[in-house]
Length: 380
Image (cartoon, rainbow, N blue to C red; front, side, top):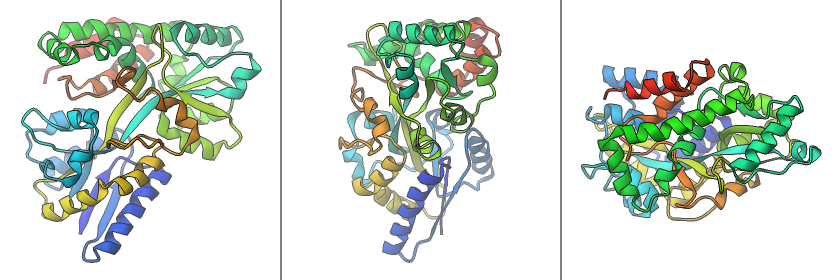
C-alpha cells in the first residue's frame, strides 16, 4: 500500500495522475497506490502536521520554499540513483541537485505563467497583443480610458510573478549569472534593491488602475480569476498556463491566447517554475517500492501524460510542446535568454512565499516599503 499526497487538484490533472497509477498497478498487481490531494497553501499546513507527527505519506509533492524548510529533517530520500536522472534538462537538473550532491525530488513538469489575452476584445477595440512594456502600458491605459480595468489578477501567483520577473530580469540575463547569484546571497541588499523595482512596478499597475486591488485581494487563483476572465469583459489575465485547460472547458466560445509577460523595455519574458516536485519519504515503510514507482513516473512516455494534461512543459531533454494551442505563444520564450524561474534553488531566501505576502501588502494599500520590510525581516 503506497500513499501519494499532492497539491494537484484540477479534475483533468488528477485524472491523468489516476490513469498513470492505474497503469502502474496493472503492471505491478502486488502494489496498490492511492492519491490524495489538497489545494493551495492548506496543503502545506497538512504536510507540516504529517511530517512532525511522523505520519508522512510514502510519496509527496513539495515546493522550493518548503524544501528549504525541511531539508534537515531526514524525510527526503536521495533519488540520484534513478535511471531517469540523466534524461533531465540542464535547467531542471541544476534545480534538483543540492549543494551536498543529493537529489531530494524529481520534477514532473515545468509550469509557465502568462498573460491571457482576449483576442476578440482586443480586435474589437483595435488593439494588439503587447510585445514589450511600452506597448503594454499603452493598451492598458487605453482600456482604463474606456472605463475597463484591463488586468485580472488573483491574490496568489499573478502579481508576485510579475514582481519577480521585473525585478530580477537583469540577474537572469547576466553573463556571469552563477557569480551574480552568489553575490546576492552574500550581500542580500543587492537582491532587495532589485526586488524593490519589481514591487514598485506592481504598485504602479495598481496606482494607474490597471489592476483593481480591492477585487484582486479576494480573488482566488484558478477559480475567481477564471470566472472573471470567462465573462469576456476584460482583455487580460495573469495566471498559470495550466488554467487554459479549464478556461477552454468553461468558456468554449472565448477566443484567447496565452503570451509571455510584456514587461521589459525591449521584449517579453517568460516566468516558469520547476515543479511538480515529487519526493519519496526516506522514513517511510516502503522506500524501495516508492522509488520503483518513481522510476516509472519519470519515464518519458508516462511523464508526458501528466505534462500534457497540465498544459505545461517537460523537464526532460525532449522538446515536445503541450498539445494545447492556446499556450503555443509561450514556447518561443522557453530558452535561457527570456526565461526566469519564479522559485530558484540558487536564491537562499524563500522568495516564492515571501513575495506572496508582499503582494498582499501592496493590495492592502500599505505601500512598497511595508512590502519589502517583510523580506528584509526574514530570518532562516
